[in-house]
Image (cartoon, rainbow, N blue to C red):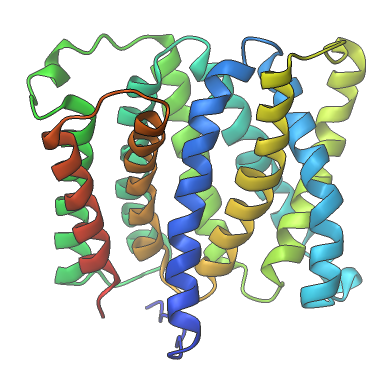
Length: 296
């Protein structure tokens, strides 16, 4: 049976903060990704954002963790698999999905991810589910559905799923397996593991990029969007997520993904888009569910 690593009183608040910031950064990725994907193909977006990220990840790993890089590279097989799933697979499939489906549909499909992580962690990692895990999962999922349907669950029956939603489902599967692998990788510092995975991913993508080429120019909004993706969803969110997986069971970490549609709705409000009281109540339910899930 998998045992959760002890998190002392000093570390636990930081871990919970990391798990809140990661979905916030990814929410911005959803919002901006819809615009940037109009200016460049998904694979080019994936390559450029990680190229920006690696410039920060290498010094961060060296300064904070001071890893033995030779020891890190000994796990190259697992790191390569993580690069395929989390660095290339999830991001490429997400951006490709946004070319064919709406952010609402993508968010609906993405709500499967915490459930899938719980299932995989239970069977593969032998993590024990508590009543707080299950109640938090149910409450948060209910809140997400309120946010996405504006309180009318019959809207779910009217959603027209398409090829983009199938692509998004593939992205969710990639991310769920990536999270399980990250939980199992306990001998390698998390930032170093992320850094090496990114380097491997960039090397894999490079031949295709050399063949296809990169966009000659970007609009100001497109440039700002890709820089944001390279800094916050890539460096901030991935580092926070992988660090948290070292201290908290994957089944507990996964539920924080339900914060993504809540933060997406908040960003929409800041952009001047309206939000209903029912959607606000759904957001509160998500936070309550996350709180229940974080209880011991």
